[in-house]
Length: 101
Image 1 (cartoon, rainbow, N blue to C red):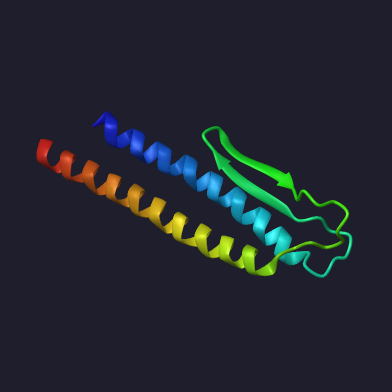
Image 2: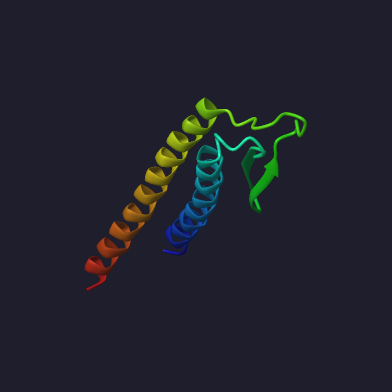
């Protein structure tokens, strides 16, 4: 039972990381017309999400809309996959409790 709980906790942590990534991407898209905006990127690591500014600071408004829309879709699918893990974990716990009862 401890293993399935660890899967659930890992999925909740991933949901937090995906949410941060999604916010960075949304901020980039919202500022696509702002000439002074510098694009940010979110990279997921073992410790969480690392947010960085784009490497080319000389370019004004370097937001790549196609890349950011792709990131949004990836975040959507990753979020759905983690929700599925949490639901499955909950169903397993319910089944175990029904067996014990």
